[in-house]
Length: 441
Image (cartoon, rainbow, N blue to C red; front, side, top):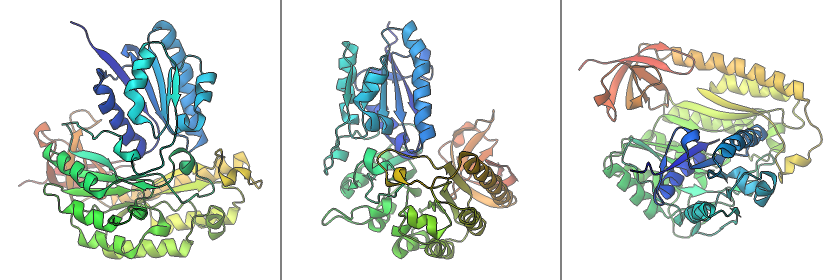
């Protein structure tokens, strides 16, 4: 009896890449590949990559060097690269990495099965053509897994904002929305398989439907999703602050299933830097949205992104970012040192901040955010939270789940509770998680 063909899939970067990786698993299952957690056992290794930050891109190349040795031991091993680095580099990757077999861009997932078949016959090939029309998102498979209670659902892809630092429009293309009927059908199908929570994904979900005549907008889509029987929780990411409307804020007060968490990237607390980034809003407008959110949904947990050391950022600009963080009190912040990205406008800016100064600012920011996060987590102690139990915790013998505010909670409980919504009293708050106990019935 043969073991079948094995796929090792490594995912870098954002939730959009995680969603794409789920699609890759579905596609390659159709041509006989089963996932493995051990790359040394794999017949096919795929790196689903991110190039939003230079460090993420460098990490991909480091991994490719490591896989060179594995391929030397297993000459029949197929090595592929997809995602944003593949889209950015294209055929150059094949030229620069002789042991690489497949390169597929962000619009070419649907071609992967036939590309793998060609690689099995000894071909080396790259597909990175953009498909910038409404058929693009129809080409990708629907997630057909039957396990788990939470799913990502792509509602749109691409971005039209062209922030001066951001490579997304160049590697993901322009904004295109899926038909709402298809989104709702997909979610209904997931619910039939036991899914209770969905996260609606897009580079800028606020713009959903804006370019499609007669299509509903994002607020209407949220309301329609909430009507699907069996959906207990709805999340979405990412929102651009310049498009964050009052009707969307009102949804947090009016839709019971909409979770008390929002990821709203500020990127900077300085108006001068925000203008140079082409973000389209001011510090004051951003804080106004935060105030309205907290009025609509008291206790909402807010997360964000911050870029440190953008060209021209002064110490005063950076202090304005720190003060914004103190005022917003983010539950978590994803912080990055600015790095030049090809094709972006900011790559041509000359007033760069020194490397050591960037690192020193990032270190200060991290210290501040760790303090705020720990204070927030400890503030949950003694409260009772609704927790959706998702599976086994990394802590041995425990289960984990998430609150409405997206806080991870670990509890000691029977595995039969996976997939259940339970009341948990929080007993401890740690840096990255909460500890709790089931509330007795």
